[in-house]
Length: 89
Image (cartoon, helix red, strand yellow):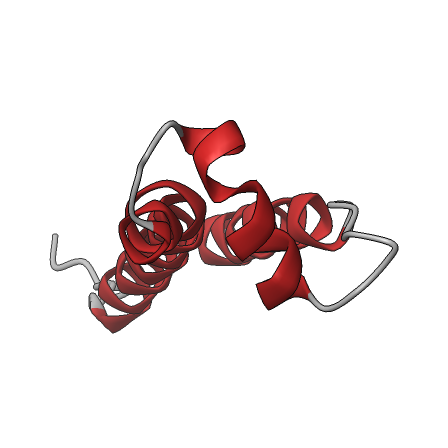
C-alpha cells in the first residue's frame, strides 16, 4: 500500500512539472530563433547572442531536465528496494 501511495505521489510530481512546462506561453510572431536573437541583449544583457541563449534561455530547460532526472532516480531507487514481507518470530 505504501509503495502505491509513493508511486502516485511521484506521478503527481512528474505531472505537475509537465503541466508547468505545458502552460508556458511561446512567442506569437516569427520563429523562436529570430525572437531570441533579436531580443537577446535586451532580455539578458549579454552582448553575445549565443552566450545569451545558452546561459540565460536554456538554463530553465537544464534545471527542469535535472529535476525530472532526479524524480526518476528517486522512483527507481524506491521501487528497487526489496520489502521483507515475511517476519520471523
